[in-house]
Image (cartoon, helix red, strand yellow):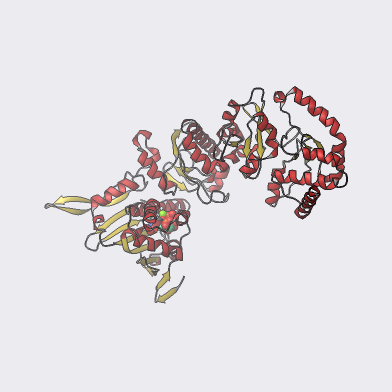
Length: 633
Ligand code: ADP
Ligand code: MG
């Protein structure tokens, strides 16, 4: 940032991204300019919440005025509109950081969506709001006066900008704490200088704001509209979640979500309930439509706002939701917790545990309902948050079965990874005599779909689940069965197809195995400690060989994943299975001179086919070339 100073006044440059954003605001036509007020009111409300929270531990911050409110007034002659609050306020450093740069998620996301097309991008602003900077949609000059709660009157800060590349900042006197934002309206925005118009916008977007939004009463006097001295509350100013469900419109639920979820989009679904019993609380929980950019940052604060008897206590109370439901947004209002509850207390509280259980149950119920009644909506949810939900299988033992029922997987009947089945559907179309749910894990959908381990399943028409999310292996290690049906990896242990096996087939195979014994032993000796065993396969129809893990060993896929993540994986020794029907294997039986090369190639190609990496690719290539030359002879 560049700075130039005269006395106490300083001029600073905006961060580059802010400049871009402001350019866009100023030079486009807006489909929805009214959202500026929603953004400024939302910030004022957040500021009041913050003061309420800090004030719980430091009464002095209230400066003997604990009636938090937001005020809006306009001056027709000056053509200004002012939004003020007596919330937490900002000091100089905070003003520079908060109103000079972009740090927050919403705006970053906004930037990632910009197309470069003025009209399209302008519409995007309409949807997003992009926070404080929305003020420049309707104003060509914005003045912010603010003082942080608890500071002296002379610690006020005045910020001013015309939305160009710079802003001015200076220290001023401000007796009242909080923030006052004055918008000098652009040409053509004069319709905003009317009480009824502002009231209409406030009721449309900010009705659910908990603090009262006050405006001067207007009355008819001497045949004209006069603005009086008395304040009146324009919004409903009651906690939305505390109202009866029948009193709340869908629209109100949606607008409230945008505020609590800091989202520009509509929610996918919500659940609103008052819970009575050992713990009494109200919860209003939302499932978003799309994942936030920091979904995978397990340290990011996320979640639910906690209130106690309508008093805001804290944002992102992560104790209220298990980690695998970290995408849920909303409010929990407890009737029993003490007002001075802190994060530390929350961590240990049995009451909170009961609330968390109740809330997880509600969310899982909401999802189960959606999966059953609105499968298309559920597919949207699954695509965005499925991977996170899978963590729940290993995290929430009490709800393991409920979570398992919500899982979706691609299968050998899917053409794309997005075509998924539930365990229930899989079981419904299991073959007669099929006792197990079969799955294969691999690093990608295609690797799983084309895995040689599937050959016999394909031949017999048995469906196999294709697992290619990183979290799958880990999650399934906690899930051994579903609805009484055992889950079995097709790449592990001796394959037992039970009743699906054909007696004839079995006999020929056993006979083959006997005949092959000398060859198997020769291969094993040749490969040395690369393999745990070499045996005849029941899995392959088209490929000459494949690798499998012993029943209780770690799967090769999981070992590879752990290694890639820099973790210690126990050295696994796979079992090499050979297909006696394959011409390459027949050819091997006759081979003498290059037997070791043939055996090594057989092993390496089996490893490659399942997505593994060769220890020594150069030697593999050399061997292949050599074998190709041999064949040409
Ligand atoms: P967001 O509200 O998503 O954080 P905004 O652009 O709306 O982003 O606001 C940026 C930041 O400026 C806020 O996070 C807050 O710290 C600060 N801020 C804005 N308005 C106020 C206000 N009225 N009182 C105190 N701080 C404010
Ligand atoms: Mg904001």
